[in-house]
Length: 127
Image 1 (spheres, helix red, strand yellow):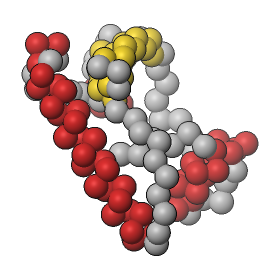
Image 2: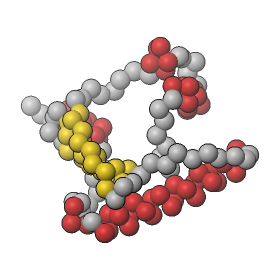
Image 3: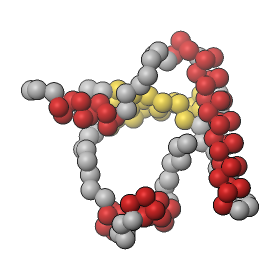
């Protein structure tokens, strides 16, 4: 399950939960950069709800994705909220898969290579 965070307090809570670091937002949440790259992003909205993004990095790698975002209000116990999130995420994943099947001509076959994987491969290449 993927959840994109943008609120600094939520990010801080997630970083603390995962790392145990007592850092603050002003200290970059206690994290250090592992890669530096310039990304040019192009973005389109399709069918009024699917955001298609294409990222081109300064080292020559290009990767795209289809995003479907929802703002949802959940109530209940922690376990109940996680279950609700899981169901909603599964439904969104199915909708993205159906969208990509419908417009298969627009998408390259195969498994995409993420930015960081491509970056580390590029950095390890002899120059």
